[in-house]
Image 1 (cartoon, helix red, strand yellow):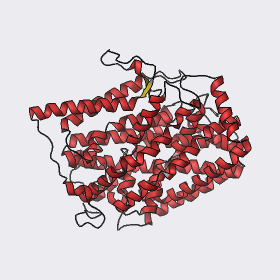
Image 2 (cartoon, rainbow, N blue to C red):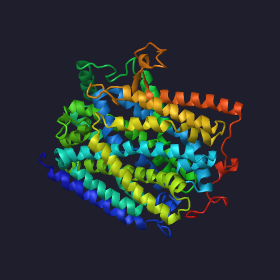
Image 3 (spheres, rainbow, N blue to C red):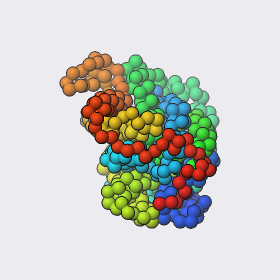
Image 4 (cartoon, rainbow, N blue to C red):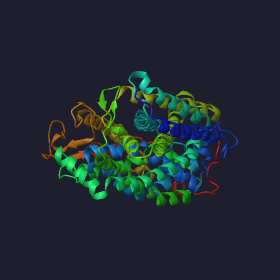
Length: 546
């Protein structure tokens, strides 16, 4: 155990205590008649306005991943880590209209999860089950990513022991999170998101003004980064993209944008909003966070200029790249402000972790438990199942931290991204057309998922420490179709994009075959008008109805 940074620890603990109290108080904030209903516990009563939704979705999408993983990737790999900026720029125009349709059809029929929508659209419990399982499994490493960010802060504060001692503070924070999420549901992260976003804005504004002044200006920062990458050349590294990783950069940005609102937790924030106008305002305003993200990413270059080194993880004996930003703050800021910065990262991990666990719990309850175990489940039984499932999901995420040691925490999210992309035809495309046959969607999902996971398995890490699941960049020359290598090029491409293309091709071919053979398709319970209903429409299902 390293020496504890007491000033920073006290500031961190005080702010963490404040949001913990807020998490428990949130049960009575904008409360409905009961929390024993998924509309209330899992969607906050479906009545959040523009400001609450802005903070909730922003707190959900811009996370510890933003503060820890992206700057760490910039520190280690250079410009390739900047992919997160273009993808958050293009995502909002892409999802603006689909999210409006998803909100309308979900409020009309009382859907709580994307798998609920698939169940209604295709009349298939099997396809809904596949979407639900994909959402749950893809979300767990995303929750783990938030816990990685929190643990990076705790290590910098001095909690850097090996074995259970090294993970004990994380487990304590996890238990606190689990308890107030269990009690308050979505209202807890919605209320805490206000504090989280304010802290993050304060810290990053101070950082981008104060740190460049101390480091000699932006020319010195970029010069130091350029010198580092020139001195240690590696394929694709540098402050500029190389010819080999430009395709990877573009497909990763586009694939990540397509995946972002397929995650169940992203849709949870949307479905919790009061109406279509709230979503319109948020999709227009949320790109403001992208400016923040761009500035955050540059912390990786600032760390290079400052000579910051990652802490050695006492549990593994290897440098932990995720500690770069916390260590930079510890090195450059006064102790009291470093404590505020650490609290911003820590709370930035808890808010999305809570929303993600709630979304995964909703999937379990509505699309597995109620569909296959207890079709007559009452709203109270559903809420109880969701609360328990949210605890189980968090334990699963902690398992990722205890048993998986990725070089970059971003790898966890990239694996989940490849998986959730395979739900695009059944969820996003289905909002506009039901042309795909049910069996085509199932076959496409199976092929895309299997091929995507296989390709991820075959990719080693850049430093050679792992033979499998080492990244998501696939060389085109290694792309094989039953032993045939159609492209001889050293350029790399995002695995998720390749898997999604395979998914769509198979879905089209099987759909054409199904139409020709007249295979039975499922029953669509939605109507065209359902996709345009808005707040106040008499056809909307009442909140809290069974």
